[in-house]
Length: 317
Image (cartoon, rainbow, N blue to C red; front, side, top):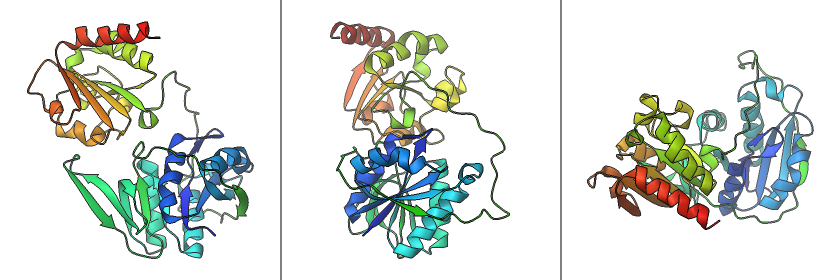
């Protein structure tokens, strides 16, 4: 019996780490059913990983047209199953995930809670709002409440399950479905994807230019196996590409370790990283706002502190 549905995130035949986080969080409701939307054969490729992660049933919503439309196939698959099973739904937070969640909630006449950091068995959830200044407990009504979970908020805990594949028929897309006219596979990067990384090293205006990212931030990130992030101020100053921006108008991250180099700690930035497990800040201004939320702070010149840390980590192998 399926007690909760999880929408599987996958890329080019590989599970995204966020899916295992979703399954772990969803187990608060009981037995997990994982919904795979994609071309024929996708569910079979993902079966072993989903079973190891704790998915008892894998609903294979597959079609030759599944990847030709934006979000519509996922909305159709999840809302159809939710209406049939009358169970909660858990989806990864983000632009696409939040869009899908809203549409599913409307179709099944149930409430939607966005960007949550914890989900509870009583169907309530914990969220962080107003830039992380407040933590709130909320409950969504309806037979199939929908939750989107912030990436990195939950540590994956594998739990072997049967992972039985059950085919699900996808309806034909309607006339209002948005069609994908071209597709470019994501470029393989040497560093972890920002929203899924367990360690993030971010630079701010204090990095003083693109060379600061190249010579200070990136070497420290590489020795830690971390992703690189940037504050809005650094992005606006063209120090680093916008796709790496962390903050309210950028990406939200919640890694195990967040290193903030030369970041003042504006509320906009805090909103995107305040739920990180451990925050380490380096700033020459001892009154910088980032120190208010940092677990460890270093008042000093980041151009001296960060390279020393990088060399020390290299020496430790």
